[in-house]
Amino acid sequence: MFGLDDKIASASDGKTLLIVMLVAIILGLRHATDPDHLAAVTTLVASGKERGARLAGRLGLSWGLGHATSLFALGLPIVLFRAYLPQSVLTVAESVIGLMIVGLAVWLLVRWRRGLFHAHLHEHDGAAHLHLHARESAAEHAHGHTIRTRSPLTAYMIGVVHGMGGSAGVGILLLASIPSHTLAIASLAVFAVFTAVSMAFLSTGFGRTLSSIRVRRSFDRLAPALGLVSLGFGIWYSLGALSLAPYYF
Image 1: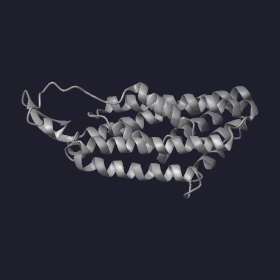
Image 2: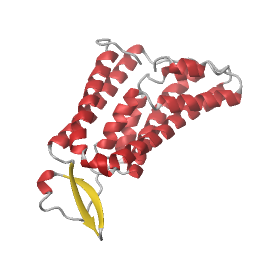
Image 3: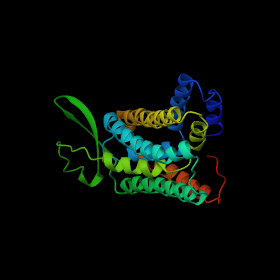
Image 4: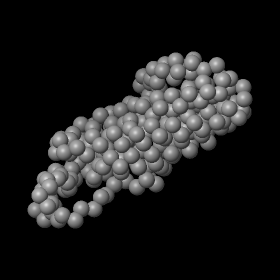
């Protein structure tokens, strides 16, 4: 992103194990902060009815593991044989990623439009806490709350699709330049794993933020802004992949 991968890659000579592994770790951590990753995971986490930090971290880790799976599977032929996917396939993959972000954003907006993010403050045993639920159920709101969120398997599959894109290309090209195939494969695995780990930490942070009383109380107003920003980003990302808009990744 914006030349950061090249700067990170320049710190490695491709020969020293410790330096190569360190660069692979940093690339994985940095790769997790790509705007398309953040847009997808933020809307993924926010679309759940309850947004606990632990559940958000589980979704982020599942998403990251799916991303790591396809990243490693598609990166392995490049590292071993310099076998690159055709540009047409990469273009389609990037377009699908944009559409996936659009889909997540639309689903968030639909849930908001149905009034599913209404905040309800009440007490249990003298302790005040906040729950989110549909407005129409406020009058008959029961206190036996069921956590409903996206399943880890769904998040994993979204991550698999997302990992097919080319936003990790510079990192894989760096690893492909390493003379030792064994070291290159190990570095690719580290790169993929630390992308997943980073996404779990980021998602936990999103979940912790979205679970705070202040944010949850205003989430009915925050959700449409978050959805519209992600929707616009997803549309731009798809158009950019098709060379119909400026593309920076």
